[in-house]
Every structure is written in C-alpha cells, then in structure tokens.
Amino acid sequence: MTDKDKVFSRLIPITTAVLALAILWFYWPVLAKLFVHLAEDEDYSFGLLLPLVSGYIVYLKLPQIRSYLWRPSWLGPVFIGLGFALYVVGELGADLYVPRVSFVIVMAGLLFLMGGWGLVRLLLFPLFLLILMFPLPGLLTKQLTLPLQLISSRLATAMLQLVGIPAFCQGNIIDLGVRQMQMVEACSGLRYILALLALGVIFCYFFQRRLWKILLLLLVLIPSAIVANAFRVMGMGLWPALQQPGFWHAFSGWLIFVFCLGILGSINWILNKIQPLSPIPPDPLAPPDPAPRRGLAIESYLVIALALVCLGGPLAIRVARAPAVELHQSFDRFPLELGPWHGQLAYIDPEMVKATKSDAHLNAEFRQPGQPPVSLWIAYYETQKKAGGFVHSPKLCLTGGGWTQLNTGIGRIGKDMPINYMVIEQMGNRTLVYYWYVQRGRWFTNEYLNKLYMVLDGLTRRRTDGALVRLITPAEPNMEEAKKRLDAFALQLAPVLPNFIPN
Image (cartoon, rainbow, N blue to C red; front, side, top):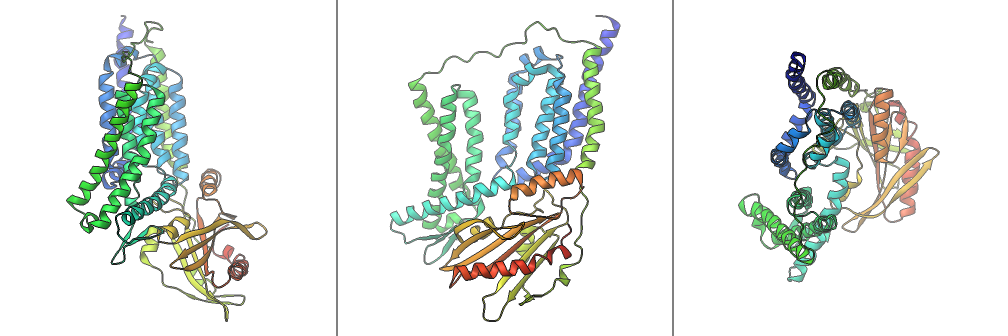
C-alpha cells in the first residue's frame, strides 16, 4: 500500500464518522422528541426496545458487515437528499411521522455510502425495526383508535351480558346501571396490537422464514389482541379495582401479551408441524469482486455527502418553517347579528381549547325567533404545527364523547361551498352537524387535502395557516327543517369569514 493509500485509509473512517455526527446533529431535535414521546406514551413505550434489538442483530452480522465495507454507491447522496426532502414535507404538513421516517432513509443513504446495496440489503431488517418504533401518524391513529374503542366496547358489553351482568353500550360508554365505564383511547387495544405486531415481526425473523406463515401469524395477532382487550374491559366491569391505576391494572395488561404470544407460539408450532422449517442459510460474505474502492473514489463520495448534509440540512430546516399568519381582526369583533340571526358568546371549555391547541377560537350560539339554536365553533391556527396544533375533524371527538353516528356524508350549501355533515345521536337526542375547512382562501371538506395543501402552500407561499368551522343544531323534530336551518345560517356566515380568516 502506498503512502497515499495509507493517508486515504485513515481519512475515510474519520470522514464517515464526521458525516454520521452531522446527520445526528441535524436529526437530534427529531430523535429527542421521539424518545420523550416513547417514554411518556404507554401505547408506544415498546419502541424503546426496538433500537436495542436492531443493535443486537447488527452485532450478529458484524463479520458480514466488515466484508461489505467501502464499496460505496452513488445512491448514498440520493437517499440523503430524499430524506431531507421528506423532512421538509413532514414539517410543512405538521406531521411527526414523516420526519422520523426521513431519518431512516438518510441512515440508508449512509449505509449506501459505506457498503453499497449489499450492505443495505444485509441490514434492511434492522432499519425496518427502526420504522416500527415510530408512533403512527395522528390522522391514522385517530382513524384506528375510534373503531377499536367501539369494537372493544361492544364486545365487552356482549361478554358482560353473557355472564348475566346488565350492560348497555352507547358509543364508547358502557352503562352498568350503578356506574358507567368510558372506553378511553388508552383502552382501545391499539397499544397491544402495535406492540404485539412488533414482537411478532421479531419472532418471525428469528423463528420463521416462510412468507405465507409470517403473514398468517401476524394476521392472527390482530383479532387476538382485540378479543383479549375486550376480556380485560369485561374484567373491569366485574371488578372495578382493575380500572384503577396500580398493580392489578398493569397486570391485566400483561396478561394480554401472555395470551397473544401463547397463541402466536402455538400456531407457529402447528404450522411447522405441517411444513417443517428448513435450515437457516448463513449470511453470505461479500463477493471478492468488485474490490473495495480505495482513495479518492470513496473519499469523493463521502465529501459530497458531507457537503450535502452541512449545506442541505440547514436549508431544509429553514424551508420547513412557515411564519405565523394572524387573523385579519380578532374574533372579539365577530358580529353577533347575521341577517335574521341573533347571537351571543358561549362558554368555552378550557379542555376543549387544550385539545384543539388553536391560536384563536370562537364559540357562539345564534337564534331566530321560534327556532332551535345554531351553535358556531371556529378554531383558527396561525401556523399548523406537529405538536397537535393543526386542523382536524370533529367527527372523532364527537363520537368519542358518546355520540353515535347515524349518517355522514358531503353536501353543498352553495357554489364552491361543500360541507361535511353528520347526524349523531345520544340518549335519544339527534343532532345535525356541519363542518368544513377554510385554508388560505380555499373552502373544502377533506382532511387529507388539508395536509397536501399545507405542504404545497408551505413551499410556494410560506403559509400553513387555516381554520375549522363547525355548526351544530338539534335535528328534532324534523331533520329537513334542521338542514334548511344550517344551510340558511351557513349562507349568512360565508361572506363574513374572509373578514377574519386570511385568504
């Protein structure tokens, strides 16, 4: 080896270490918030173990890793750039999940630089485990949590009735006569499904190799967790002590894991009896050709990547920050006379404000003589943020509060003015709800479009502000009259909104 090669052989690990530290510095805020989230959220605390499992698998593969080193690929800088682009998208879309996934993509780019596609393929499963540790996006979690709450509530109610306990289920509330149990998000069973799926994936990695068996085992875990969670809720109905935080509450949760992992192991044993496992082939060493690249070839790859991180990282952070846009005027000046409607400000529950994390809000009740009232709620966000401060559908909040959805859909009150409508019921009382989103001059009904426009407007207009508008009126005694009432009020409201919400 020449003196020049010796110099390069020393510089390459140093440059790689500096590049890894630069990536860690860029993602440190994302990773720090992630670990705080995992430590504080019982639903995802299992995620703290997954990096340790990934590290153990990497340790087992060290001989193969060494044989793949210093075969860089041009895909390294491409993946790092793609990761930064996803980071910007996630920040502008007020999403926590996408910036975290972008970290894994950047890490894949680093592996491409160190050993090419061979090294990435070797460590693909440890990288995948890192993705499993990330809490799901808020929109997806809400879509999954509510149905699971309702399923668990209904199953637990049916189980209580089977053993002779009078129980009645309405929404996510189980009425036992002498007391009520509310199926909160933490009891939906989602935490068990996610944790068990992660454990199931690890189990299959070590003990199963047939794809059809793996898919079957993972699919079985989902209904197993739902049924086990319903048994736990049933137990809370029979023994109230299980509902209180403490040993028995935690112990009943652990029983779900024991039950589901027992089912997983039993089915895996049966499947292996049907089709025995074949011997595990050893991980192959890297082929002798192509030879590891030396000197300027690999150093140039690393320098390009380091420049991309040092220049592109700060640029991505700057692009991803949209400044706040205030209301044209405060909601304190909102008119309480809208055509024939006369309004008054209503009490705002601090918990509601805390849940919405809005920057400005209006809660008022409007009436016409001889007609039921119309409740108006507007939540405005100067810039929609990842930490919960973004527009989201009231559908899940209302249903989670014990209301039962009877009908939902999309209607229209005028040209370019679509609305979401819901007919909900609680204790025999029916209510009609209209809601829509007003985002930077747009009026639309789709929550996912809100995310898309946030990213586009964040990139092109440096704005992510927006508002939710919700109208509620009693649907009794006549649903058609209630619909006409909200249509008429919304038409009076529409021309007033641009005086407050920026276009």
